[in-house]
Length: 176
Picture 1 (cartoon, rainbow, N blue to C red):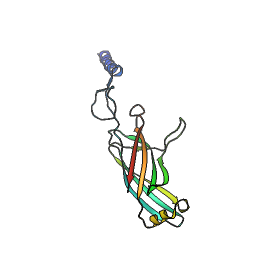
Picture 2: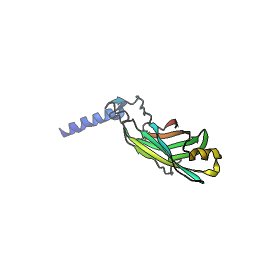
Picture 3: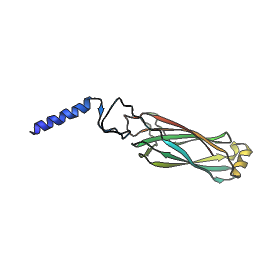
Picture 4: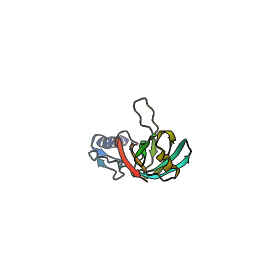
């Protein structure tokens, strides 16, 4: 009797293992059984400019804080490897910044973030701008707190599974 149950279980496992059926669809959360030919679509992350503000300004430097609100609409957790962005004031490039790092080799370490499913996370970054590097008009604008900000960037992410989802890039641009 026990041998028959074990044999039946082995046959069922073999059917799933050698067929194109996936018992658990861990990407979309849609169905328990689907074919492997179904392309696993990773929904793009949602990135918003939460805030940009001048924290401190002196005759020598200004410290600006940039906040991004990132939402993961996927059923599964996502690894956000890096947000790379360029900060502009009145179309003058001020700085290129990175939040997190992408691994570049097998032995390289990375500083990445796990975004839980259907959750929102706010990422903050500080940018220091030296007064000597830019025209005087920029400093007047920053001192009066009347900048015309633009941020262009990319977010690099993938599913928390090595076997599904692949590398994804989201391009964004914000003005404030």
